[in-house]
Image (cartoon, rainbow over all chains, first blue to last red; front, side, top):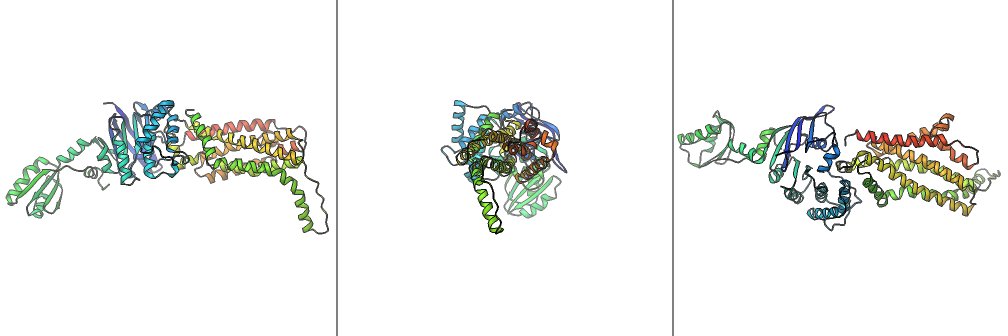
Length: 307
Length: 256
């Protein structure tokens, strides 16, 4: 599969602050790609460089093979972008803004009419005559996604599209993004893990300006899955926790009632040892399973702190 | 300049649909209408104030003429209207940056040069229409209240004022690229205008630079023969073009 975005050794330094620290990233074409990281990790800086509104200090980035610094118009024609806080001309209506955006891409006539109509419908803004200055945040974000699609882009880049929204607004925007699966490549920056879990198929986790892990959602969870074991006993979980905590393969152990959760460095050794320990202490086992981690578990493990 | 025509269309529509329609045209219309009236009532006002303040002294002020009406217009335009033009255009680019519209627009195939030049050109168009309407109004009222002489001289004066105002628009838009604050850009623009006014005292600057446009109108209206305006006109046009180019060059190098 070809890459929609390729970033190699990207650095961005603002005076004393290193916003990007040798960022490497490859976004496969056709994916819904979650660009995940805590606040200040460098997500917006990376997007600003990709959209040509900021210049890299060193390194390079290409979109569909075009260099983002030198081939700005070629890149822009292929991309739709929604900034984290989209700005509009308050005197325009949603339809006027979409028409204005479309004309900037050279779209006109019947094609523009058709796209404006269908995008207003998709954004739930058809028939809204209120000027954009009077829109709610949710309406502004939905218009933001719509205007980013006016050129039928091969790549849609969204910067924190749900971070300022209430649950209903988030749901609407995520449904719009989910509906684009298979139609275009979506590159979606966020610090909200559940949003990524809901819509993305591939994820990169960014921390301190560099990617600490890039994988498909499936692989990411499977890796975590292989190292997590849940043990539930009828009684004696406290003693079991102490016994397991001293094993050489144990990384982290926690208990909740009669359930003990283990993160292991050697899952095979853990699978052999745990039944032996249970038998030696005559503990009755209810269940012992490989536990599927949430994205939050993986994220915390990678980044080393709570998101 | 990708997207220039579309962006210029948006700028012109914005003028019609926002406060921008009322500020400069409103001030210009007021000046066009009131300048002949002020000229007419000023001698009477001065005489009555003088009579009250210095009793027994009789001050005779000749009645106002067509020249006074046009001089009044030129003076008001050079002071009130030009300062208003500087303030109104000082946020042209910085407002787009602050509102986030620059970020959403400039990621589309529209060049930064197109945005800056569309801003300058749309303000020149607005100013041209406002100036034409205002000057026509002033000339019409003057013709009714006084006479219709000196129309050609007045037209020349208005053209010179427009050139100076157009230069100040270019400077102001350039400052709005440099400064994020409209107040900062307006302050710098007014300071530049003040320096230009001071420079007009110096003979060489008056003869060869845009500073020469400041006093030329009054001289033409009062019948001074052969007022040298060629160099000030040429340097004003050249400077407006150069400042516009500098604004584009600067904006292209900025991060948004």
